[in-house]
Image (cartoon, rainbow, N blue to C red; front, side, top):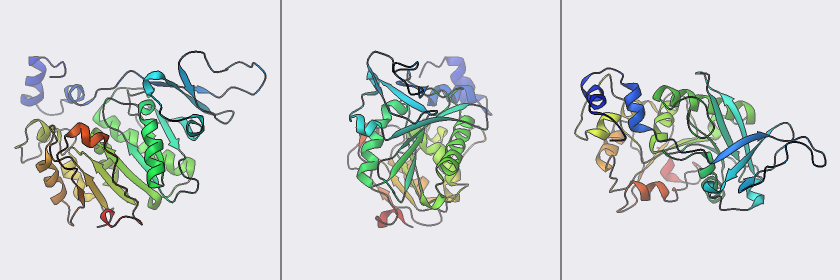
Length: 305
């Protein structure tokens, strides 16, 4: 099971509390980075800092800022015009990790910006094509970030770091771009629903989208679990009732990881009904790759409760 030894499995399930190191091995699969960030070179003929040779795609940037280099593995699906809409920078979390951030200006003057917490085993380089398409389709700008230990973000993946990472992204989005909470849609996909639910339980925003959400670590491993134990990881089910913003849940009917029933349990813990989208006969992989339901609050009744 993801490289765990017998002793580690015993520790995970038989020796609580807080088996954080082992839970991290179960939950996090950071890929090899598919991008890098470099300072924008000073203007000048043949000046230092010119784009390196090789199979890279490079965004334009303002002097004194960062630009992104995408490798072939990022598989960018658009042209230079779309690449130039992508702004990148690095911020620091409360746990002293450097967090890579990406802002995709899909629609000039967009009413809403989506703060997107991506799924497992991907980084910003692999996600940027999806962000361009998503933002263009729903008429929103997209802001995203890499978790500690993903992409070029420093540190190691952990539950505590997830919460600090999204806090840093939230603060950067608000202070750097001046975007108010009522113009921010929080979107979490798979493992990304963990920081999304945590943030949404503490701050009100325009709307919250949970795409293939986890209920808790123990409930994923043991679907019949009814109680949240002190050593359980990612306890979304205990936090979701604290969300006061409109919520949309998207989940496949044949999800092979958590299944639909735990998600129903996640929904009914709220004090008011939660709109849900059920892509028919789709597993977790198909639900992850499906184009999400447009969720702009002013345009979709399904996003309001």
